Image 1: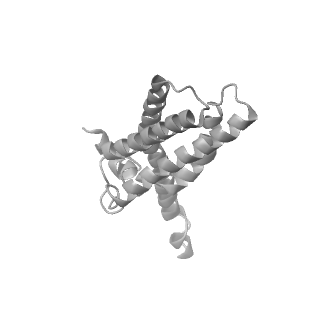
Image 2: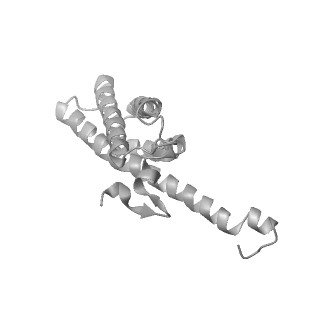
Image 3: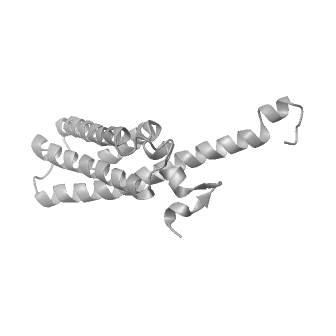
Length: 170
């Protein structure tokens, strides 16, 4: 049995993770304030001028993350609503998006002079971004898909048309 074959709420993980919610602007927007708070933890011994530079670097990095997700939406994930992609594809998209964000932040912080210019620090940011992206993008897709599917099944079983027809127990 492959991971994509596991069922939750009557759908496989491939359908849940690799379907409609594989790339979601809802998740991107929900993640925005959380990501901003995470960025603030990278400000070490920052002067007020450095804090504004960090915000600019963060915004450019977060935008780069969004550009990768948009590119995936237009290419490898474009037909996901009709044919879900493999879970591994969503993991790979998340890894690439996170890695690009880490690289952008690493180089941007170095160019702005707000972070040590050590190559190993940039590498750590890329590796961390890649790891976070490959975990959080599929988990976010799963989370949103489960909420959507649960709501869909719940409304179909207990509301709407069944009660309108006079059957309160449907």
